[in-house]
Length: 230
Image 1 (cartoon, rainbow, N blue to C red):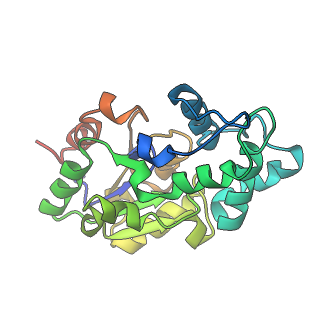
Image 2 (cartoon, rainbow, N blue to C red):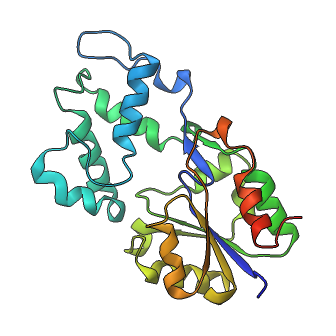
């Protein structure tokens, strides 16, 4: 059966958190030193842990961590608590600033073929929804890169009260774009979260959540694998 609609994950699929040097200028460690590139990369890993809980998150916040993508305030407090641990070594006030960097549209870079993939889907007349476990509105990130008009629907966990792999989120996304799950392709970087779309009848294609410079055409390859791209 031909694909008539496409669902796409956000982080690790269409965009990746890759702030430039200007985004972290002024961030300091407790000893007054500036964050170097290696230390900043470590902190990004803390802030984007895919499974489990961050190593330095207080035990009393573990439950909050698991529901962070449903509540913006819980999301912020859990991340800031983890980054405030003495072992992290950030100066006072820095965890909040680092969290703000994560939310800034300019901190997220699209993969090299994100624009091309979205434009191809528009040209083919295939409706698109972005389905993301996230605690803030990502539309400004798409707008900052000139891509907002290429996405028909944004189905975001904090707004819907559902998180992947809950199949209801995929059902809702298919309903929003007006396409039956059996005619829909889900593309994402997580076999567990995004791959759960197959439970409602969608097809699924996984892409690796690599650095943007290392993954030039995985999205187009995923579309090609399902007969959408030539």
